[in-house]
Image (cartoon, rainbow, N blue to C red; front, side):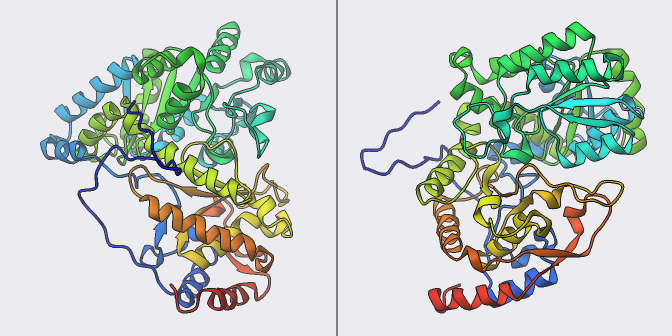
Length: 482
Protein backbone atom coordinates (compact mmCIF):
# COMPACT_ATOMS: atom_id res chain seq x y z
CA UNK A 1 0.00 0.00 0.00
CA UNK A 2 1.24 3.50 -0.81
CA UNK A 3 2.14 5.35 2.40
CA UNK A 4 2.34 9.14 2.22
CA UNK A 5 3.07 11.41 5.20
CA UNK A 6 2.28 15.13 5.23
CA UNK A 7 4.81 17.75 6.31
CA UNK A 8 2.10 20.10 7.59
CA UNK A 9 -0.05 19.83 10.71
CA UNK A 10 -3.19 18.50 9.01
CA UNK A 11 -3.18 14.87 7.92
CA UNK A 12 -5.80 14.07 5.30
CA UNK A 13 -6.63 11.03 3.16
CA UNK A 14 -4.85 11.11 -0.20
CA UNK A 15 -6.69 9.63 -3.17
CA UNK A 16 -4.62 7.27 -5.29
CA UNK A 17 -6.68 8.05 -8.37
CA UNK A 18 -7.58 11.05 -10.51
CA UNK A 19 -10.98 12.22 -11.74
CA UNK A 20 -11.55 12.05 -15.51
CA UNK A 21 -15.36 12.25 -15.81
CA UNK A 22 -17.51 14.65 -13.76
CA UNK A 23 -21.24 15.01 -13.15
CA UNK A 24 -22.79 18.39 -12.36
CA UNK A 25 -24.52 18.67 -8.99
CA UNK A 26 -27.46 20.82 -7.94
CA UNK A 27 -28.05 22.32 -4.48
CA UNK A 28 -31.63 23.63 -4.25
CA UNK A 29 -32.38 26.43 -1.74
CA UNK A 30 -33.64 25.32 1.66
CA UNK A 31 -37.22 26.37 0.89
CA UNK A 32 -37.29 23.94 -2.05
CA UNK A 33 -35.68 21.28 0.14
CA UNK A 34 -38.55 21.66 2.61
CA UNK A 35 -41.04 21.18 -0.23
CA UNK A 36 -39.09 18.17 -1.52
CA UNK A 37 -38.86 16.34 1.81
CA UNK A 38 -42.57 16.99 2.42
CA UNK A 39 -43.44 15.61 -1.04
CA UNK A 40 -41.29 12.55 -0.21
CA UNK A 41 -43.19 11.86 3.00
CA UNK A 42 -40.02 12.52 5.03
CA UNK A 43 -38.55 9.36 3.55
CA UNK A 44 -35.19 10.04 1.92
CA UNK A 45 -35.71 7.03 -0.38
CA UNK A 46 -38.59 8.90 -2.02
CA UNK A 47 -36.64 12.07 -2.78
CA UNK A 48 -36.04 12.84 -6.44
CA UNK A 49 -32.35 12.85 -7.23
CA UNK A 50 -32.82 16.26 -8.90
CA UNK A 51 -33.46 17.64 -5.39
CA UNK A 52 -30.39 15.98 -3.84
CA UNK A 53 -26.97 17.64 -3.58
CA UNK A 54 -24.77 14.89 -2.13
CA UNK A 55 -26.34 11.43 -2.33
CA UNK A 56 -25.08 9.48 0.67
CA UNK A 57 -28.11 7.19 0.81
CA UNK A 58 -26.14 4.08 -0.10
CA UNK A 59 -23.06 2.68 -1.77
CA UNK A 60 -25.20 0.16 -3.67
CA UNK A 61 -24.76 0.52 -7.42
CA UNK A 62 -23.43 4.08 -7.19
CA UNK A 63 -19.69 3.48 -6.79
CA UNK A 64 -17.43 4.98 -9.44
CA UNK A 65 -16.10 2.56 -12.04
CA UNK A 66 -12.45 2.66 -13.07
CA UNK A 67 -11.27 3.44 -16.59
CA UNK A 68 -10.36 -0.24 -16.98
CA UNK A 69 -13.90 -1.30 -16.06
CA UNK A 70 -15.39 1.14 -18.55
CA UNK A 71 -13.07 -0.15 -21.26
CA UNK A 72 -13.93 -3.79 -20.49
CA UNK A 73 -17.61 -3.12 -21.14
CA UNK A 74 -16.82 -2.62 -24.83
CA UNK A 75 -15.72 -6.24 -25.36
CA UNK A 76 -18.80 -7.90 -23.88
CA UNK A 77 -20.20 -10.99 -25.62
CA UNK A 78 -23.97 -10.50 -25.53
CA UNK A 79 -24.90 -14.06 -26.47
CA UNK A 80 -28.01 -15.21 -24.59
CA UNK A 81 -26.36 -18.53 -23.70
CA UNK A 82 -22.75 -19.64 -23.48
CA UNK A 83 -21.36 -16.10 -23.40
CA UNK A 84 -17.57 -15.74 -23.28
CA UNK A 85 -18.18 -12.84 -20.89
CA UNK A 86 -19.68 -15.25 -18.36
CA UNK A 87 -16.70 -17.57 -18.72
CA UNK A 88 -14.29 -14.73 -17.94
CA UNK A 89 -16.28 -13.77 -14.84
CA UNK A 90 -16.63 -17.37 -13.67
CA UNK A 91 -12.88 -17.95 -14.06
CA UNK A 92 -12.05 -14.79 -12.09
CA UNK A 93 -14.35 -15.84 -9.23
CA UNK A 94 -12.81 -19.32 -9.16
CA UNK A 95 -9.35 -17.77 -9.08
CA UNK A 96 -10.16 -15.44 -6.18
CA UNK A 97 -12.48 -17.59 -4.04
CA UNK A 98 -11.46 -21.09 -5.08
CA UNK A 99 -15.04 -22.36 -5.40
CA UNK A 100 -15.88 -24.39 -8.51
CA UNK A 101 -19.52 -23.34 -9.05
CA UNK A 102 -21.06 -19.94 -9.71
CA UNK A 103 -24.63 -18.74 -10.22
CA UNK A 104 -25.19 -15.16 -11.43
CA UNK A 105 -28.07 -13.01 -10.17
CA UNK A 106 -29.21 -9.43 -10.67
CA UNK A 107 -28.21 -8.34 -7.14
CA UNK A 108 -27.62 -9.52 -3.58
CA UNK A 109 -31.22 -9.89 -2.46
CA UNK A 110 -31.85 -12.18 -5.45
CA UNK A 111 -29.13 -14.43 -4.04
CA UNK A 112 -30.83 -14.31 -0.64
CA UNK A 113 -34.12 -15.33 -2.22
CA UNK A 114 -32.55 -18.39 -3.85
CA UNK A 115 -30.61 -19.40 -0.73
CA UNK A 116 -33.65 -19.02 1.51
CA UNK A 117 -35.96 -20.97 -0.80
CA UNK A 118 -33.51 -23.88 -0.93
CA UNK A 119 -32.27 -23.94 2.67
CA UNK A 120 -34.91 -22.34 4.89
CA UNK A 121 -38.05 -24.19 5.96
CA UNK A 122 -40.73 -23.41 8.56
CA UNK A 123 -39.20 -23.50 12.03
CA UNK A 124 -35.59 -23.57 10.84
CA UNK A 125 -33.04 -21.23 12.40
CA UNK A 126 -30.33 -19.05 10.83
CA UNK A 127 -27.69 -17.84 13.31
CA UNK A 128 -25.76 -14.79 12.10
CA UNK A 129 -23.58 -12.04 13.44
CA UNK A 130 -26.24 -9.47 12.53
CA UNK A 131 -29.15 -9.28 10.12
CA UNK A 132 -29.61 -7.15 7.05
CA UNK A 133 -33.13 -5.99 6.19
CA UNK A 134 -33.69 -8.05 3.04
CA UNK A 135 -31.86 -11.07 4.48
CA UNK A 136 -34.19 -11.22 7.45
CA UNK A 137 -37.25 -10.65 5.25
CA UNK A 138 -36.38 -13.58 2.94
CA UNK A 139 -35.69 -15.91 5.86
CA UNK A 140 -38.89 -15.04 7.74
CA UNK A 141 -40.99 -15.20 4.55
CA UNK A 142 -39.85 -18.82 4.20
CA UNK A 143 -40.78 -19.58 7.82
CA UNK A 144 -37.31 -19.28 9.31
CA UNK A 145 -36.08 -17.62 12.48
CA UNK A 146 -33.10 -15.26 12.69
CA UNK A 147 -30.77 -15.46 15.71
CA UNK A 148 -28.41 -12.48 16.02
CA UNK A 149 -25.19 -13.44 17.78
CA UNK A 150 -22.93 -10.44 17.39
CA UNK A 151 -20.53 -9.98 20.32
CA UNK A 152 -21.46 -7.51 23.04
CA UNK A 153 -18.96 -4.98 21.66
CA UNK A 154 -20.91 -4.88 18.41
CA UNK A 155 -23.77 -3.03 20.09
CA UNK A 156 -21.54 -0.54 21.89
CA UNK A 157 -21.75 2.81 20.11
CA UNK A 158 -18.41 4.11 21.33
CA UNK A 159 -15.72 1.47 21.35
CA UNK A 160 -12.12 0.76 20.43
CA UNK A 161 -12.84 -2.89 19.56
CA UNK A 162 -11.28 -3.56 16.13
CA UNK A 163 -13.78 -6.26 15.10
CA UNK A 164 -17.23 -5.36 16.37
CA UNK A 165 -18.78 -7.58 13.69
CA UNK A 166 -17.44 -10.77 15.31
CA UNK A 167 -19.89 -13.51 16.22
CA UNK A 168 -20.01 -14.61 19.85
CA UNK A 169 -18.97 -18.27 19.71
CA UNK A 170 -20.49 -19.09 23.10
CA UNK A 171 -23.84 -17.70 21.92
CA UNK A 172 -23.59 -19.80 18.75
CA UNK A 173 -23.13 -22.96 20.79
CA UNK A 174 -26.07 -21.99 23.00
CA UNK A 175 -28.33 -21.50 19.97
CA UNK A 176 -27.34 -24.90 18.57
CA UNK A 177 -27.96 -26.53 21.95
CA UNK A 178 -31.35 -24.83 22.33
CA UNK A 179 -32.72 -25.54 18.85
CA UNK A 180 -30.74 -28.63 17.85
CA UNK A 181 -28.28 -28.84 14.98
CA UNK A 182 -30.88 -30.41 12.68
CA UNK A 183 -32.94 -27.17 12.81
CA UNK A 184 -30.04 -24.92 11.81
CA UNK A 185 -30.54 -24.04 8.13
CA UNK A 186 -27.08 -22.48 7.85
CA UNK A 187 -24.80 -20.11 9.72
CA UNK A 188 -24.46 -16.69 8.08
CA UNK A 189 -21.66 -14.17 8.48
CA UNK A 190 -21.99 -10.69 7.05
CA UNK A 191 -18.74 -9.02 6.08
CA UNK A 192 -19.22 -5.50 7.35
CA UNK A 193 -22.36 -5.54 9.53
CA UNK A 194 -24.45 -3.06 7.56
CA UNK A 195 -27.01 -2.06 10.21
CA UNK A 196 -24.60 -1.49 13.11
CA UNK A 197 -21.98 0.70 11.56
CA UNK A 198 -20.31 -1.34 8.83
CA UNK A 199 -18.18 -3.09 11.44
CA UNK A 200 -15.86 -5.93 10.31
CA UNK A 201 -15.15 -9.39 11.67
CA UNK A 202 -11.74 -11.06 11.89
CA UNK A 203 -10.36 -14.09 10.07
CA UNK A 204 -9.71 -15.65 13.46
CA UNK A 205 -13.40 -15.34 14.37
CA UNK A 206 -14.44 -16.86 11.04
CA UNK A 207 -12.08 -19.77 11.76
CA UNK A 208 -13.71 -20.37 15.15
CA UNK A 209 -17.15 -20.43 13.52
CA UNK A 210 -15.87 -22.93 10.95
CA UNK A 211 -14.76 -25.24 13.76
CA UNK A 212 -18.24 -25.14 15.32
CA UNK A 213 -19.87 -25.75 11.94
CA UNK A 214 -17.61 -28.77 11.33
CA UNK A 215 -18.41 -30.11 14.79
CA UNK A 216 -22.16 -30.05 14.13
CA UNK A 217 -22.20 -30.57 10.35
CA UNK A 218 -23.46 -27.08 9.53
CA UNK A 219 -23.08 -24.97 6.40
CA UNK A 220 -21.25 -21.63 6.67
CA UNK A 221 -22.46 -18.90 4.32
CA UNK A 222 -20.65 -15.58 3.83
CA UNK A 223 -22.41 -12.43 2.66
CA UNK A 224 -19.44 -10.78 0.94
CA UNK A 225 -21.20 -7.64 -0.27
CA UNK A 226 -19.01 -5.40 1.90
CA UNK A 227 -16.00 -7.69 1.69
CA UNK A 228 -13.67 -4.99 0.31
CA UNK A 229 -13.96 -2.86 3.45
CA UNK A 230 -13.66 -5.92 5.69
CA UNK A 231 -10.46 -6.94 3.88
CA UNK A 232 -8.98 -3.48 4.47
CA UNK A 233 -9.71 -3.68 8.19
CA UNK A 234 -8.28 -7.19 8.51
CA UNK A 235 -5.08 -6.08 6.82
CA UNK A 236 -4.90 -3.01 9.07
CA UNK A 237 -6.07 -4.45 12.41
CA UNK A 238 -5.46 -8.23 12.57
CA UNK A 239 -1.86 -8.99 13.53
CA UNK A 240 -1.80 -12.48 12.00
CA UNK A 241 -2.84 -11.07 8.61
CA UNK A 242 -0.71 -7.94 8.48
CA UNK A 243 1.95 -9.54 6.31
CA UNK A 244 -0.53 -11.20 3.94
CA UNK A 245 -1.65 -9.68 0.66
CA UNK A 246 -5.32 -8.80 0.15
CA UNK A 247 -5.56 -11.74 -2.26
CA UNK A 248 -4.15 -14.11 0.37
CA UNK A 249 -6.54 -12.82 3.05
CA UNK A 250 -9.47 -13.22 0.67
CA UNK A 251 -8.57 -16.83 -0.10
CA UNK A 252 -8.04 -17.62 3.58
CA UNK A 253 -11.57 -16.38 4.30
CA UNK A 254 -13.09 -18.17 1.31
CA UNK A 255 -11.49 -21.48 2.27
CA UNK A 256 -13.41 -21.36 5.55
CA UNK A 257 -16.82 -21.00 3.84
CA UNK A 258 -19.20 -23.30 1.98
CA UNK A 259 -21.06 -20.57 0.09
CA UNK A 260 -20.20 -16.95 -0.71
CA UNK A 261 -22.85 -14.65 -2.10
CA UNK A 262 -22.59 -10.95 -2.83
CA UNK A 263 -24.15 -7.86 -4.25
CA UNK A 264 -21.86 -6.61 -7.00
CA UNK A 265 -23.53 -3.24 -6.52
CA UNK A 266 -21.09 -3.04 -3.61
CA UNK A 267 -18.38 -5.63 -4.30
CA UNK A 268 -16.89 -4.91 -7.70
CA UNK A 269 -18.70 -1.57 -8.21
CA UNK A 270 -21.21 -2.69 -10.86
CA UNK A 271 -24.87 -3.75 -10.89
CA UNK A 272 -25.33 -7.46 -10.35
CA UNK A 273 -24.53 -10.25 -7.92
CA UNK A 274 -23.90 -13.93 -7.58
CA UNK A 275 -23.46 -17.07 -5.50
CA UNK A 276 -20.21 -19.04 -5.33
CA UNK A 277 -20.68 -22.66 -4.18
CA UNK A 278 -18.27 -25.36 -3.11
CA UNK A 279 -20.55 -28.43 -3.24
CA UNK A 280 -21.94 -29.63 -6.57
CA UNK A 281 -25.05 -31.22 -5.06
CA UNK A 282 -26.02 -27.95 -3.43
CA UNK A 283 -25.28 -26.07 -6.66
CA UNK A 284 -27.69 -28.37 -8.52
CA UNK A 285 -30.42 -27.73 -5.92
CA UNK A 286 -30.17 -23.98 -6.50
CA UNK A 287 -29.47 -23.94 -10.22
CA UNK A 288 -33.07 -24.25 -11.41
CA UNK A 289 -34.14 -21.11 -9.55
CA UNK A 290 -31.82 -18.89 -11.61
CA UNK A 291 -33.61 -19.28 -14.98
CA UNK A 292 -36.93 -19.22 -13.10
CA UNK A 293 -36.36 -15.89 -11.33
CA UNK A 294 -33.31 -14.24 -12.92
CA UNK A 295 -32.35 -15.27 -16.45
CA UNK A 296 -30.30 -17.95 -18.13
CA UNK A 297 -27.41 -19.55 -16.22
CA UNK A 298 -24.78 -17.49 -18.07
CA UNK A 299 -26.19 -14.06 -17.28
CA UNK A 300 -28.72 -14.40 -14.43
CA UNK A 301 -30.37 -11.04 -14.91
CA UNK A 302 -27.09 -9.13 -15.28
CA UNK A 303 -26.07 -7.04 -18.27
CA UNK A 304 -23.10 -8.69 -19.96
CA UNK A 305 -21.40 -5.29 -20.01
CA UNK A 306 -21.70 -5.09 -16.26
CA UNK A 307 -20.34 -8.65 -16.04
CA UNK A 308 -17.22 -7.63 -17.95
CA UNK A 309 -16.81 -4.65 -15.63
CA UNK A 310 -17.31 -6.92 -12.61
CA UNK A 311 -14.50 -9.21 -13.73
CA UNK A 312 -12.17 -6.20 -13.70
CA UNK A 313 -13.69 -4.82 -10.49
CA UNK A 314 -13.09 -8.05 -8.60
CA UNK A 315 -9.43 -7.99 -9.62
CA UNK A 316 -9.18 -4.33 -8.55
CA UNK A 317 -10.61 -5.34 -5.16
CA UNK A 318 -7.40 -7.27 -4.61
CA UNK A 319 -5.48 -3.95 -4.79
CA UNK A 320 -4.99 -2.35 -1.38
CA UNK A 321 -4.74 1.15 -2.88
CA UNK A 322 -8.19 0.69 -4.45
CA UNK A 323 -10.09 -0.62 -1.43
CA UNK A 324 -8.59 1.70 1.19
CA UNK A 325 -10.00 4.96 -0.20
CA UNK A 326 -13.52 4.47 1.21
CA UNK A 327 -12.47 3.52 4.75
CA UNK A 328 -9.92 6.37 4.84
CA UNK A 329 -12.55 8.98 3.91
CA UNK A 330 -14.96 7.50 6.45
CA UNK A 331 -12.32 7.56 9.18
CA UNK A 332 -11.56 11.20 8.39
CA UNK A 333 -15.23 12.13 8.75
CA UNK A 334 -15.65 10.12 11.94
CA UNK A 335 -12.52 11.59 13.55
CA UNK A 336 -13.59 15.15 12.71
CA UNK A 337 -17.09 14.62 14.11
CA UNK A 338 -15.71 13.05 17.29
CA UNK A 339 -13.41 16.06 17.69
CA UNK A 340 -16.48 18.31 17.53
CA UNK A 341 -18.39 16.25 20.09
CA UNK A 342 -20.92 14.88 17.61
CA UNK A 343 -22.01 11.31 18.46
CA UNK A 344 -20.98 8.68 15.89
CA UNK A 345 -20.22 4.97 15.80
CA UNK A 346 -16.59 4.22 16.64
CA UNK A 347 -14.26 2.89 15.55
CA UNK A 348 -14.89 4.06 12.00
CA UNK A 349 -16.25 1.17 9.95
CA UNK A 350 -16.87 0.59 6.28
CA UNK A 351 -19.63 1.71 3.93
CA UNK A 352 -20.14 5.12 5.57
CA UNK A 353 -20.12 7.33 8.64
CA UNK A 354 -22.88 6.41 11.07
CA UNK A 355 -24.43 9.17 13.20
CA UNK A 356 -25.80 8.02 16.56
CA UNK A 357 -29.32 9.48 16.46
CA UNK A 358 -30.17 8.00 19.86
CA UNK A 359 -27.78 10.56 21.39
CA UNK A 360 -27.92 13.28 18.72
CA UNK A 361 -31.68 13.75 19.24
CA UNK A 362 -32.05 12.08 22.64
CA UNK A 363 -35.26 14.06 23.26
CA UNK A 364 -37.09 12.08 20.54
CA UNK A 365 -38.46 8.69 21.72
CA UNK A 366 -37.86 5.63 19.53
CA UNK A 367 -41.60 5.42 18.84
CA UNK A 368 -41.21 8.73 16.96
CA UNK A 369 -38.32 7.42 14.83
CA UNK A 370 -35.34 9.59 15.85
CA UNK A 371 -33.04 8.32 13.08
CA UNK A 372 -35.69 9.01 10.44
CA UNK A 373 -36.26 12.49 11.85
CA UNK A 374 -32.52 13.22 11.88
CA UNK A 375 -32.13 12.04 8.27
CA UNK A 376 -35.00 14.35 7.27
CA UNK A 377 -33.48 17.28 9.17
CA UNK A 378 -30.02 16.74 7.67
CA UNK A 379 -31.42 16.78 4.14
CA UNK A 380 -33.34 19.93 4.97
CA UNK A 381 -30.29 21.92 6.12
CA UNK A 382 -27.76 20.53 3.64
CA UNK A 383 -29.30 18.80 0.64
CA UNK A 384 -27.46 15.64 1.75
CA UNK A 385 -29.44 12.42 1.49
CA UNK A 386 -28.57 9.85 4.15
CA UNK A 387 -30.35 6.65 5.16
CA UNK A 388 -32.22 5.79 8.34
CA UNK A 389 -30.85 2.62 9.94
CA UNK A 390 -32.96 2.26 13.07
CA UNK A 391 -36.50 1.39 14.11
CA UNK A 392 -37.93 2.48 10.75
CA UNK A 393 -35.77 -0.21 9.15
CA UNK A 394 -37.32 -2.90 11.35
CA UNK A 395 -40.75 -4.39 10.78
CA UNK A 396 -43.58 -4.80 13.25
CA UNK A 397 -44.39 -8.02 15.07
CA UNK A 398 -47.41 -9.99 13.75
CA UNK A 399 -49.52 -8.45 16.54
CA UNK A 400 -48.68 -4.95 15.31
CA UNK A 401 -46.30 -4.02 18.11
CA UNK A 402 -43.21 -1.99 17.22
CA UNK A 403 -39.76 -3.61 17.20
CA UNK A 404 -37.29 -1.07 18.54
CA UNK A 405 -33.86 -1.28 16.92
CA UNK A 406 -30.69 -1.87 18.93
CA UNK A 407 -29.31 1.33 17.44
CA UNK A 408 -30.79 4.45 15.88
CA UNK A 409 -28.36 5.44 13.14
CA UNK A 410 -28.25 7.80 10.19
CA UNK A 411 -25.85 6.30 7.69
CA UNK A 412 -23.94 8.67 5.46
CA UNK A 413 -22.59 6.31 2.84
CA UNK A 414 -19.43 7.28 0.98
CA UNK A 415 -19.61 5.46 -2.36
CA UNK A 416 -16.14 4.51 -3.49
CA UNK A 417 -14.23 7.19 -5.42
CA UNK A 418 -17.30 9.44 -5.77
CA UNK A 419 -16.96 12.39 -3.35
CA UNK A 420 -14.17 14.89 -2.85
CA UNK A 421 -12.69 15.94 0.48
CA UNK A 422 -14.31 19.39 0.22
CA UNK A 423 -17.72 17.71 -0.03
CA UNK A 424 -16.91 15.62 3.04
CA UNK A 425 -15.94 18.81 4.87
CA UNK A 426 -19.23 20.46 3.82
CA UNK A 427 -21.07 17.48 5.32
CA UNK A 428 -19.14 17.87 8.57
CA UNK A 429 -19.92 21.60 8.65
CA UNK A 430 -23.69 21.14 8.22
CA UNK A 431 -23.76 18.36 10.82
CA UNK A 432 -21.94 20.65 13.25
CA UNK A 433 -24.56 23.37 12.76
CA UNK A 434 -27.41 20.89 13.03
CA UNK A 435 -26.01 19.46 16.26
CA UNK A 436 -25.94 22.95 17.77
CA UNK A 437 -29.62 23.30 16.81
CA UNK A 438 -30.64 19.70 17.50
CA UNK A 439 -33.38 20.62 20.01
CA UNK A 440 -35.39 22.10 17.18
CA UNK A 441 -35.71 18.64 15.55
CA UNK A 442 -38.94 16.78 16.33
CA UNK A 443 -40.24 13.29 15.68
CA UNK A 444 -42.19 11.65 12.86
CA UNK A 445 -45.35 9.54 12.57
CA UNK A 446 -46.44 7.24 9.76
CA UNK A 447 -49.10 8.43 7.35
CA UNK A 448 -48.64 5.40 5.07
CA UNK A 449 -47.01 2.25 6.46
CA UNK A 450 -46.37 -0.77 4.20
CA UNK A 451 -46.26 -4.18 5.88
CA UNK A 452 -42.97 -5.31 4.28
CA UNK A 453 -39.75 -3.27 4.08
CA UNK A 454 -41.61 -0.13 5.12
CA UNK A 455 -38.45 1.99 5.18
CA UNK A 456 -38.21 1.80 1.38
CA UNK A 457 -41.52 3.45 0.54
CA UNK A 458 -43.44 4.35 3.70
CA UNK A 459 -44.49 7.98 4.24
CA UNK A 460 -44.28 10.01 7.43
CA UNK A 461 -45.15 13.47 8.71
CA UNK A 462 -43.57 15.67 11.39
CA UNK A 463 -45.32 15.66 14.78
CA UNK A 464 -45.13 19.48 14.94
CA UNK A 465 -44.03 22.51 12.93
CA UNK A 466 -40.37 21.80 13.74
CA UNK A 467 -39.20 21.78 10.11
CA UNK A 468 -40.45 25.32 9.43
CA UNK A 469 -38.73 26.50 12.61
CA UNK A 470 -35.49 24.84 11.50
CA UNK A 471 -35.68 26.59 8.12
CA UNK A 472 -36.16 29.95 9.86
CA UNK A 473 -33.11 29.36 12.07
CA UNK A 474 -31.04 28.34 9.03
CA UNK A 475 -31.90 31.60 7.25
CA UNK A 476 -31.06 33.54 10.41
CA UNK A 477 -27.58 32.00 10.58
CA UNK A 478 -26.73 31.52 6.89
CA UNK A 479 -28.52 34.43 5.22
CA UNK A 480 -29.01 33.83 1.51
CA UNK A 481 -26.63 30.85 1.40
CA UNK A 482 -27.77 27.65 -0.24
